[in-house]
Image (cartoon, rainbow, N blue to C red; front, top):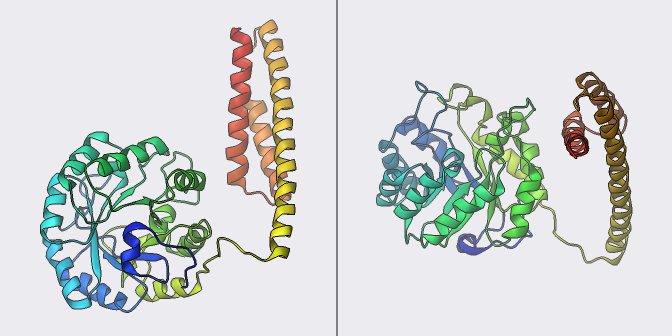
Length: 360
């Protein structure tokens, strides 16, 4: 891979000519497994070897990691391959042990980021370290919670900070394990352009055959790097088997990924781009105008329902609209996922308008 985007902060010290790549198994299972994977990744684009040694699991009884013993294995990876190593920490005790074993980079998982109490405990334990610390987005799509966690770590004196976008949980069934919510990641970049942003396609997809596409989207959106779970025998991995790729597959992914230039100075390109963007601006204004007209119609419906004492929600009508719009969207090349999310938002706004009229 060849990168045209300038790396920032602690990434500069790595002197990379490609996006940062963090790779390794979801879980450190045995010393032999860790070292075998590390040696297969040694002469690739991987800068940090990752392995989870404390694994927060949703349900008890599942494999929860080998614990502190795995830190010794990571030290051996450093000695034998020269690669930097990293692992997840979920409490102050994990931080203390990781720092004592000179782990090069620490990351804080989504389940930890969601709790301000846990984040403060970890922040206190990290106080003053010069190790890079990456903070994953919380499980729920709450940008302020993510930023709050980062602020706690920064306030403890940690200056080498990064963020990991690993997708968000949803009760709706989608093709993703955790929906990307790319707009939240874009908003994060806009607000904090100097904090490196790493994409975790493994946890977003939950399926190895989708990893490449999510990686490419992340790089198209100017992410600074990727964290990809890698195992020499992923089907028999002790955790998250379906989302891990082999080292050979990872190398191929890195070869196939395209790094887009942020800008192009050619006059013809910029003229064509400005023209297309102007068209989009006009269409966006039309869309807003049409939605505004739709809400005025909803206000009138609300007034009529109030007069006749009829409930706001009409489930049969709503399901008919949704089914019809999905089919209509397909004819225009729009995904079912997009149509459902868009019209659910429009429907909620319509309900809000009608309730305001009825209560007024």
